[in-house]
Image (cartoon, rainbow, N blue to C red; front, side, top):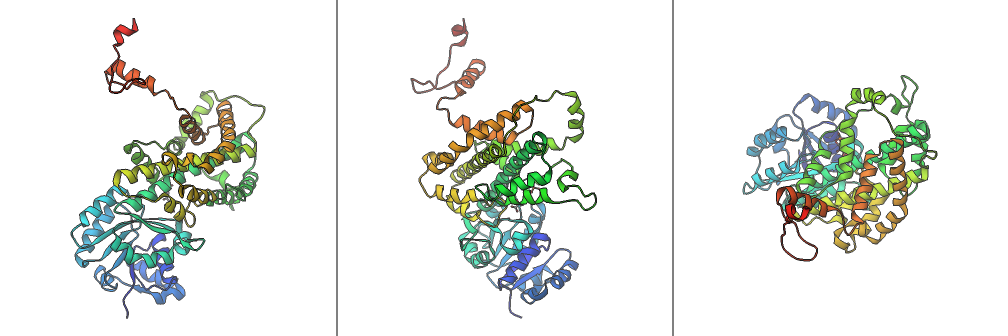
Length: 470
Ligand code: 6PG
């Protein structure tokens, strides 16, 4: 039998879908799994694509079944399982072979692994894959890190299997070592912020507008025909329209208000802070998920703490739509700012326009806004800041007033809108040439002699506070 173009290890939901996608595009794929009984089931389920799949039951035969230099795609849990796999399989590989970790991995681990591969002749690729099961099967967005050698080997397969936007594949080699996993992490951070803002708008319509799930779904369906067009609005509208077969109630009404998370949103924040950045919209989204888990406390405090008051006018759907538009631009701008900071710090030379392009189809945050961001990045942005791109300034000028009204209404009504408020707080901060950090510096020098810069002289200065205060 002829040898496989690629090997896929790990036949969970994502691994199966990616293997079938590759087989569908005419590649021969060697497949295997830790629990070997999954392998025959998978082959039996793969119908006419089975002819392009080569089932293997041991690591040795799996490796031998793949053409050299080999490309081996691993879809297994990140962390310790990946390290154990590298230790097990490396002795079976030859110079030029590439191991791809296609899971949601911490980019720091990917950098360390890439480093450990140096001078071994083997290559390590960290690849972010977005789009869930359907995306993986029919066209994901893929963010690839690693060496040029690995990319050249993998590129024809990656481009064939990726989602296409106007004919261009939504996959790119973004940079070395952890670049791919870092970009995927920030993608997920933006995903968290977008989901939270949609949830806040939903809350406003449900709690203040007294709209049913189906009615809110209809509002979102309508928005999806305009500038908010995106997978997340579409998915939220479909979820709101779904009915629970057991009770006949809207699905969203029978789902407990406690949100989980697997860690990528948290990684985005940790890395943002380490880079001296802040992603306040993503932090708000993370915080909201964390607070959601304190269900019992919230139920008690509902009767113990006083809520906000009343307003004669609750925000209109058109204000909510515009607030969501502004919030989305601002959270994307924060995400791209983190990417730029990481690119500078790690010398990755990330191409922001290219990232916007590969997020345009296949991934969870795909949206009409990303079209505009692609165009914005094609120009020289003042200070590299997306919110200063002429098109974004124009969009913000027309939508921020609504964001302001929605956040103000939320504050007066006691209707929580933490991510929208964070977006506005950041926007307002960036519109002030003279902020309030002079006060922080005065405080720091007053109690800690930390020093400050003056507006009228260069160098470091101290106040003679005891004397001056008299
Ligand atoms: C994607 C998703 C995907 C998944 C994450 C987020 O791009 O396809 O981001 O990776 O949804 O696991 O999940 P959590 O909300 O559990 O962190």
